[in-house]
Image 1 (cartoon, helix red, strand yellow):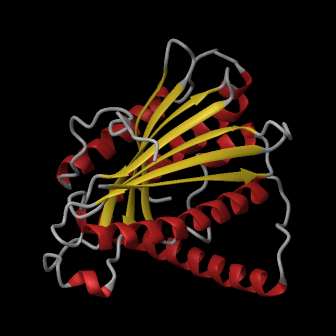
Image 2 (cartoon, one colour):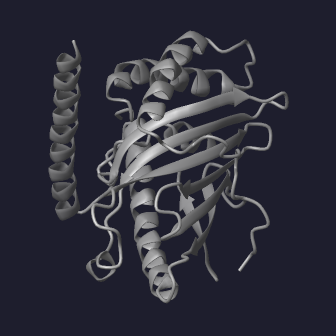
Image 3 (cartoon, chains in turn red, blue):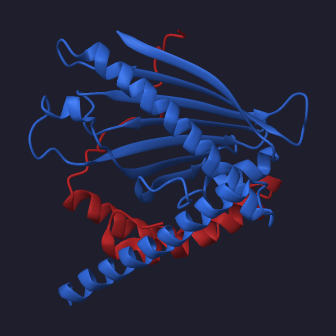
Length: 74
Length: 210
């Protein structure tokens, strides 16, 4: 899948591949031996965060699970 | 006023498989409206949960009747945030998805919880809730109705996409009628062509910068 930053797609694919293996083979199996994808993630983030600034995508200050507050159930 | 919608879904795959597929579900033949996908944040918490934020760009076409009330040259795509928590201890995945573009016009928030099906431990059930609201004076009800109808269609597509990715991961051919298989093949071909075109386009763009 393409990244929002046109030049970041290759870095993203590299990271995705690393993450997907770690997630299935380590994380879900309870193996806490550290994350091997830190470096690829850092490179990918450097690229994509720059693209987000350039495109003015309004994500600054958006809280994690943000709108999930005081939700009425029907 | 907010419109609330709730439904349950079932995937005949294990919770682990569903979680693995969750991160690999784009592109699929039912996700033509998803243009880009990025991880913006990811961390394993001290309590061993994986928290992530994903940013998606999706095409967002308004229906004809709505168009004349919208600003001209309104962007035809929308940014969506999807936050998630994967808890491998309790085997629960919770996602919260909402649009950060055009939110005054219509805001759709979706919360999903993926759990092991209590009747069959190798299946996964999804509890899906959505809140749809609009602040457009005089039109909010009509827009909410439209939003709800479109949300329901997109749930069907999401589930089909999920099933497709899961079947592919498990190396099975999903059981389908001949017509469905033909349609799917056509979609796959179109998808492959589209991805290739996107690749070429970004390549061309890169070249321009050099």
